[in-house]
Image 1 (cartoon, rainbow, N blue to C red):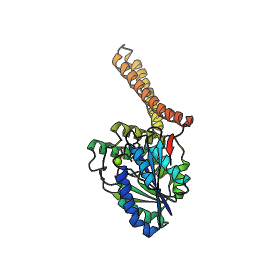
Image 2 (image 1 turned 90 degrees about the horizontal axis):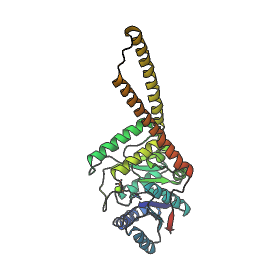
Image 3 (image 1 turned 30 degrees about the vertical axis):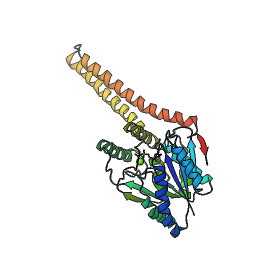
Image 4 (image 1 turned 180 degrees about the vertical axis):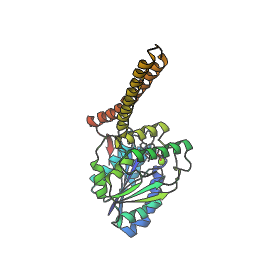
Length: 314
Ligand code: UDP
Ligand code: MG
């Protein structure tokens, strides 16, 4: 059975070799039990350091190593997609693993994950962090809030702190690749396809070298992508706000008419008029903004640009 290990790499010159060694070591022990032929699929996501050169060297030494080099940075989601598609093209891809290059995904979990999927009881083995040790508290707080919000507003079953460290069988991969959207949000796409998933939990591990590529702002935008891709509730909220304000304004009009009949019409109320105008225009901008977000995403979808451009591959 072939096992394709798909690894997105962006400026990982320090981690790639460490990763390769560690995984080879783990596989050497589990291969006997499962008769597995592993292959590495590294995707260089437009790194500006020597990651690409390192990958080529590695491929020259070990024929199990294949790579894709992007023409520029297209983001982790694109890199994952390219790797997954390559796993299929190569004729292998009976079992597929996606892992980060920085060894934050514990390789020791691979054998139990293999066992879960190989037994036929599960189609996918997923992993989630049960702690966020070593992470800035503000980031953890926002991450928790994001998961809470996502659970409320989306129809899919989003698992807390799920990582992009998964082992899946061919049927599962085929299903994932059916989702050909440009606005890719793995945390939503994988649960969306369903199947039988076994979850493995582990404590957070710091990356071996280098630093995280996800700034707070990038994560924030990514979470907005996720919300827009997997929920249309914000649009419903916009309409609901409209209905509420419409009803309130009717009540207010009735109040003004009655006041006029009973007390006459003293000309005052500049302050309340301004407040009402500001309030309503604020709500209008807010809801148009929500609409705009969906429109923008629709725009990128209809352009149907490729997810990524490959400069070189092996
Ligand atoms: N990555 C990538 N393209 C990017 C950003 C990240 O391919 O634009 C890769 C990166 O090399 C790593 C994985 O995605 O293998 C996870 O990135 P990182 O470790 O920076 O994220 P974190 O673990 O902090 O969430
Ligand atoms: Mg990492």
